[in-house]
Image 1 (cartoon, helix red, strand yellow):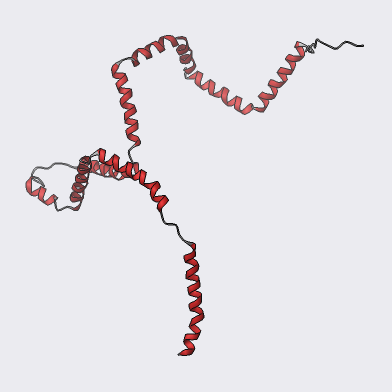
Image 2: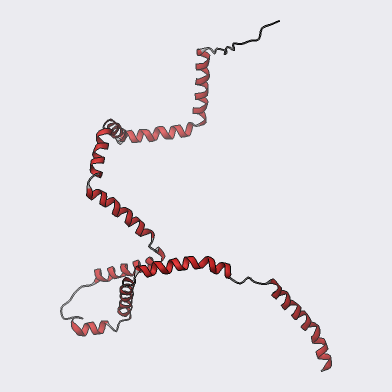
Length: 208
């Protein structure tokens, strides 16, 4: 009887043939992505002309020293506090309603234009009498109302606003669950009443 094969030998490929196959595959890849490769080469050429590659080489060569300087700079208390303030500022910006802020920005721009065009002339429009005349202007009155609204908003207690918002958010799901559902039977009842009235109208006219 023939003995079972216990050793499996892989078929050895000729190195020259393997190299030729790899070159053929690379040629196919280059040909399929010809435009992308040309664009990448042009981009690298422009980066090299600006000296960015030399800067990158220098930065990589001095990476340890650069990292050390960055760590030392970040270890400063003022830098740490600046980073904290920046994060708090970003968080505060997230609470600003841009739709409500937009009209105020327009009003501020208009005010800056008025200030830029203003020229003080002695003896004209000054004094207490000029102030009284200005109070009759509708724009001045509207501006004072805006300032009063801002002052009133600054006096609101922030804790009360947060509590009201929390209560409103909690009450919304409850209101949705307790909202009365429309009964489709009411529509059918109206249709039935209209049909009965239409049938009764000829009888009423006959009696008359």
